[in-house]
Length: 488
View 1 (tube, one colour):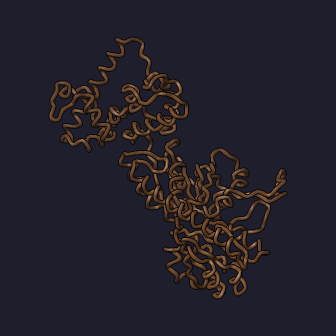
View 2: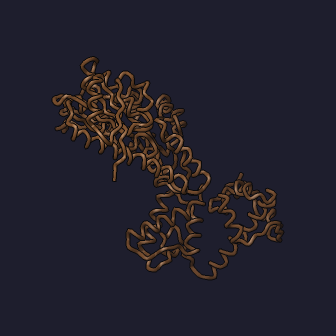
View 3: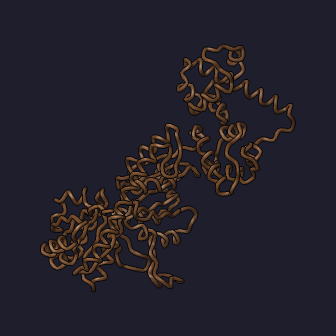
């Protein structure tokens, strides 16, 4: 089968060499030539090129190498992300390493061996096809209730997925907020995979509960002899994430002493290792996460205001699991299937009582707690159905006697029915407004109405007694959803 024609853009100051290479590559290659200086005016490089061949050798003879290498920075920013092959002198290894550091895919020596060049160009073209296919897979994942590891069909999660899709390709700083266990790192990885830097690494580091000196060394690296025990040089997380994404978790725990150093790296895009005066340029995308309220920390003088504004270009909030209960069945089934396969178990479903227990729990540990609870339950399961007794004690309330269970359950059921009936009547049987008033998801309210046997327009002596027996609705908000009563 004939291989598809590779669209090659050859940028060189030696047009005779460019024309010669274009002719000798032969069948299977369509070559467009141009000067490196003409790069800003060559739209085909941005849109239709499969591979870019950049002749650094001819350009360095006429210009400063640093100026020429800036063209690398321009090319790797293109949305097409066409891989770049650099052409250099055989003895100029330093220039090759610098080009690779700036995002070049590979390098060949001049004058090039045509057979070797064909092989390198085809390998780079296959790499480009793989990137395009990954982009399609990412786009498809956004329409199926999950986003590269994150799952949720609730309205708030769908809005979050849509926002991630918009800002993913845009090289802006992102601040992710949310309680512990909500999946902030998963969201950061999804944004990275949606970005033009997805072929480069995402380097993650947590700033929580670490000494300032250790955090500084981890971020900036050090030279040999910088301090006692520094027997070799070591690059930091900034350098490791060059041309990729750096994810700093629990940024609210970063000490005041290190905050201006982080700000300087983000502003100047350069750093110095500990024990060195040499400046190292870095090109990273910054994503940070925290469970703290950084705005309050700024007011209290615990977090620099200028750093906060630098990090908070786009803020994304991951809601706690108790605020998106509609997603609990989806997440629980996903975890069940994964752990059943991992542990080679036959369990395939939850019992009604087990699923009800999951939906009623407050989940202070959020998705991480749910995952751990399902993992334990699957490990302890024996048959195809997972029951409530397989859950941790916090999810199952062992009753002292069947009579007390019946009495307690009946009291709770009647209380819920009175509360829901009164709220529905006061909201004109508008279920969306009733769900907001009760502080629960709309889907959970629908299931509650069905469980309690409530019909529209229903009037009941229980509901009539509600005014005298229960506080106003705001005072008992979230009772039906499993929360606690709070008086006005």
